Image 1 (cartoon, one colour):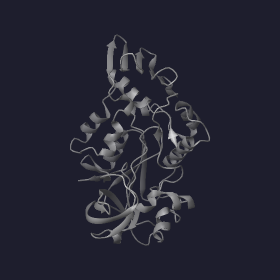
Image 2 (tube, one colour; image 1 turned 45 degrees about the vertical axis):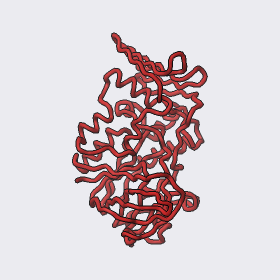
Image 3 (cartoon, one colour; image 1 turned 180 degrees about the vertical axis):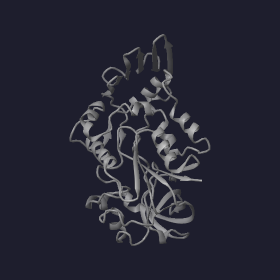
Image 4 (tube, helix red, strand yellow; image 1 turned 30 degrees about the vertical axis):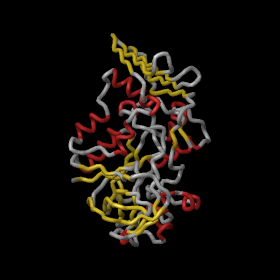
Length: 358
């Protein structure tokens, strides 16, 4: 499954930053969380895509408009024009192999014919194992690599062995600046408009991923859960700060290298606290995180080493009360336990974030 619109995010960022419309995501992070290092899982979603590497960028700010040109001399590049009252017009790439973006009063319109590197989405529709309301399917039990991430709290000790597969993040959709994200509909009632803006055809894996993310974001949380889908980094920061304050650490799983399913041994663990906001990356054309604060949790970092020597420092969450979860949740089927019977834990993939106060 792939979202074919790959270039518009960086282009919009260049255009709006050039026009001094707002502070950058990085500046907002530093202003609100000056003492919180940014984890790799976040910083990687702020980078320019590979197609902009080794290219030149020129920005001309004139009276009433902004012009941006990127690319090699004489070759395919990017042109951005920001005019008075006309919004933003963007075209990138050679003729017949380009992405066009228009930002006007009606929002963002994207038309993409680019044949380059696609953006892959790693979580299939309906299979998010970190949302407690959803039941696992038989296919998920058989094929989902996240199955291996669940374990019991009693097994969280030095010397314990677990069969694990830490996969590299495959959803490379980056953050939009908040003022851009807020201009785009994010509602099941507007799903056809969303499809049109991102050139997504109906009845495809991409369209199902969009619909499923919207469904998950709009569904009510379970008892004791406060949830929020952050469509920008700024919104994620604000939600976290509203729940935990501004003295927080942001922690993600870091794995030395990608490896096959293998036995990992726990060589140490550190408890981070019993209050946390957990944010899970969703399948969407741009970065959206399902964030929630739940009661009765313990957050850990766990140091592991694999049979092949691969080292990992994994973020882990243990839920001490699962009585409100869907009885058919993936964790119960994998661990063969009943809701509310024992604490259930899971490691987090590398593109998810745990926030804890310090």
